[in-house]
Image (tube, rainbow, N blue to C red):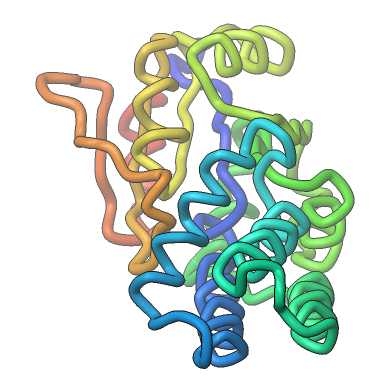
Length: 234
């Protein structure tokens, strides 16, 4: 019998490996650098506003985050931010770009198991060089049939990718920690959408869970994914 489900898309950051935790640590460092100029709540609000408006210019990823921190530092100090602080921000971002990969629980075993019977596609947003680095360091790269690093995730994104690398969106699944980017647009494309929540998710990626969607599933971690896939592939 031909499998109903043939292709599985995986998000990368905070689905297969840790990511947001390092952004939070760097944001803590940023707050310490500017403690004399703005309280933490105000600084966080200004930084989020800068990140949000800069997404169209810089996209997702560490480099855009660095530029948004610098822009925020200039704003809250009214142009008087010391060069040494700018240097510290750049160093913090460079440290993020060098940080070793920490796989999420079950990620390695689950990807290996599923790669034996399904086409796997990594579908991730972010900076090209940084995402390629993380995938190479993760040890998971050879298990994926394709890698798509995209500027955004929409219904059209999943329709295009699952047509290119699979049997179409209707026979594909997308797995990720973002309801907004991984789950809802995949469901709109006709795929299964599997939400695997992460304790730290950037507020920009928050969205309501879909109501009445039979192709929507939620798992506490990746460990339960093979059983779900087996059930849907029968």
